[in-house]
Image 1 (spheres, rainbow, N blue to C red):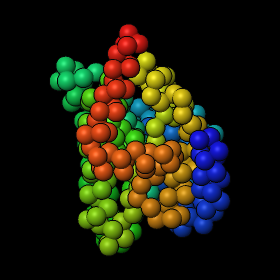
Image 2: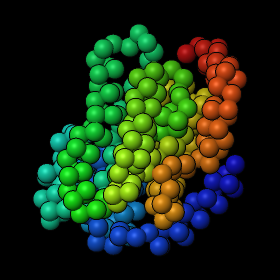
Image 3: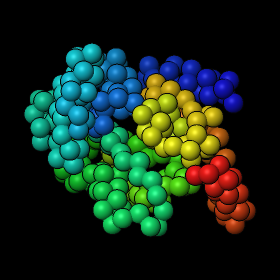
Length: 272
């Protein structure tokens, strides 16, 4: 498993050298004060892009931006397009919708929990697309990167709001791609399993059972993204085995659900 992931990361890093339109490109990365977002911002900056680092935490955004020679634009990711354009001299070429909320709980989760998860994990992407698409379609180019999660392709035990809204994020990314790819709009959906970030730490016993054993570094996710950009590939799978799980889910959904239910019962047996 580890060798397979390392090999993919090496291949992605090598192919990243041929990524088009990154040198000098205006890139926005939301939720980039740490974790996957910070790794993506660092990678684009190292490749010569002009980067905006966004995070709700202004201090974290500034620290990452200062480190990589980028511009910090703190605040709610739903409302930063105009200020990001100004910071980049008028144009956003690549938008990485990375900010996310890992809401746990089941059907009993409060309305406010579901609403917040929907707003951050789905509607922030929709609002960004609404603001970016007119310019992108007029000039015939633009790249939208959505950090989804393997939970958007599969699911995650103990986290109904997260799983449901990540399915929504994937569906929106798919819709963008199928609707606008012939007009020059490129779309990528990043779908990792466990990544060693604060979000994994906060996922509790469910994360320890399902995600922690195969967790990778945020830099591995950035490598996988650059490999997908070079290959013009929609799905970004830093954990290659997720493709097999996705196929199994589609081929025999009931068998897959029985397997996930066994995992649910195993988790419940831990005293969750």
